[in-house]
Length: 94
Image 1: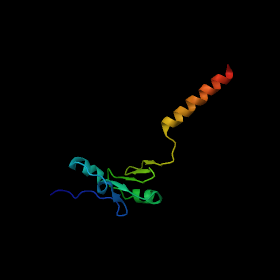
Image 2: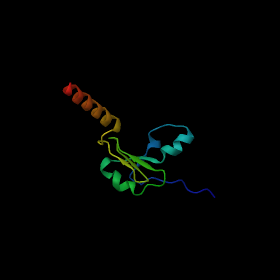
Image 3: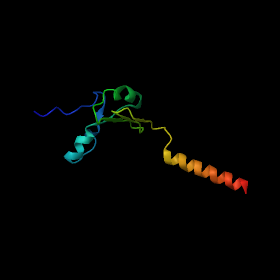
Image 4: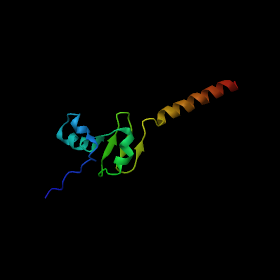
């Protein structure tokens, strides 16, 4: 018998409801839930393996505990900022 498909926490709206996709992609989309940012951390504890939650603001919670907050600094932006500060410091030394 086929195992039942994993499901998202009941407070999460499946991204598959909002996106039309081929069947292969729809299966993955069904494991991505849209939630209010304030509820994400609590709901993430109930995610099935492979499940993810996202907020409209851009937050991400994964089943394995990985979290990316929408307001977290982006690594590329931080590198660019450091590069610009280094260039400015070198210019001052000349």
